[in-house]
Length: 65
Image (cartoon, rainbow, N blue to C red; front, side):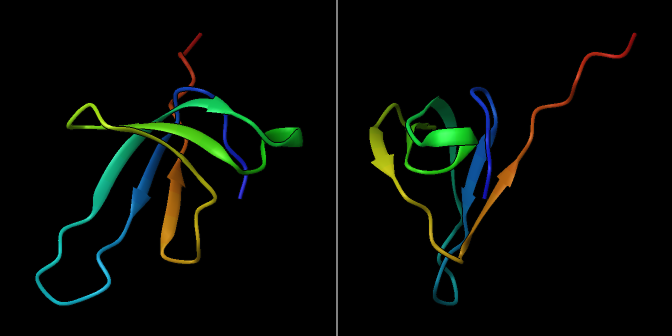
C-alpha cells in the first residue's frame, strides 16, 4: 500500500451498520510511500496508522495539463 501526502485513507467498517472512516494523509513516515502514515480524520483527530487489509488509499487526482 503506497501513498503520498494529500491522498485519502478509507478504513471500511468491520460490522454491519458501521460507517467508513475517511482521513487525509498528511505525512508518509515509511520509505517509498509505505506505511506508517500520519493521518487527519474529518473530525480533526490525528493519528499515526499502519493500515490493515480493511483500508484503501484513494490517490489524489493529478492536475490536467
